[in-house]
Image 1 (cartoon, rainbow, N blue to C red):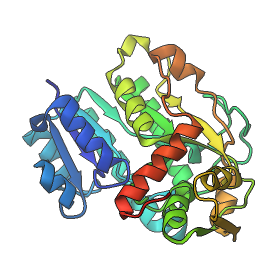
Image 2: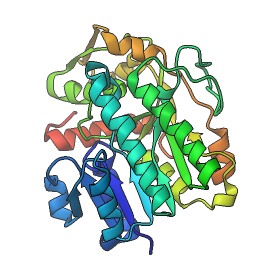
Image 3: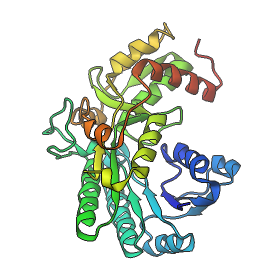
Amino acid sequence: MKKYLVTGSYGQIGMDLVPAMLKRYGKENVIATGRKKIPEAFKELDVIYNRLDARDEYGLRRLLVEYDIDIVIHNASVLSATGERNPQLAHSINFEGFYNVLEATRELNLEQLFSPSSIAAFGPTTPLDNTPNITIMEPTSIYGVSKVYIELMGNYYNKKYGLNFRSLRYPGVLSPEEPGGGTTDYAIWIFYEAIKNKKYECFLGPDVELPMMMMSDCLKSTFDLIEAPDDKLQHRVYNVTSMSFTPEQLADAIKDYIPDFEITYKPDFRDGIARSWPHSLDDSAARKEWGWKPEFPFDKMVIEMLEGVSKKLVIPYK
């Protein structure tokens, strides 16, 4: 059995990814890391956890050697909204951290490096409808610039050194867990506020359409790509998506279950970021090359989020 090390494991995705990996690969084969103390949820699962800042190249190499790691899943990143508030921190973690992981993977001749990209890698000059897998990429946020860097460096190391780099351009990822500073976070907070207060002030305009997917589809796509035979892959980076919607469309769907829910709009700097991102993605390359297929359409997502957030808040939504 291969051994995996996950950076940024206490983030929104990591908090679901690590438990799923334990079930899939076995507790002894998954090493979770992060800059903070071990999350309580990980303690309950008896996760092997080490504090690690990806910028610490010596600490990183020590863990890779100590645990005889085969595959690194590098999730540590400052997200879009947080990055615009502190671009210097975003540069330090997103660029330097990734480079350390990239170099360690190369020098230790590890089997694979998976590091996600994002729809933030695109920009206003990108075709925004059904965005192709290969297209113009001129992002306007530090987070987006860092994701283009990851893609280009991963591709370069693959061609230069044969490093088995793989990446997915995640759209907005939805789960009942509280999000961590992204521009698509509205699509999670809206459920919290609808259930708690029956109203929500959205930081995006009502017409901002963005691609999204449920966490379960995010994890499915991640496992599918990591485990795909290398000879099937014609690309190193893939679009994946499940659905697209606007805040207004999501609010209308929530009103079907919470009729007195009200939404207002007060767009801030995140609205400008979101309007530079795709409305929808062409993920045909992922579907063709390694059989990607999402399982959650829009209507099923709304019910799943209402039930999940309601359970987390211990407040019935009906």
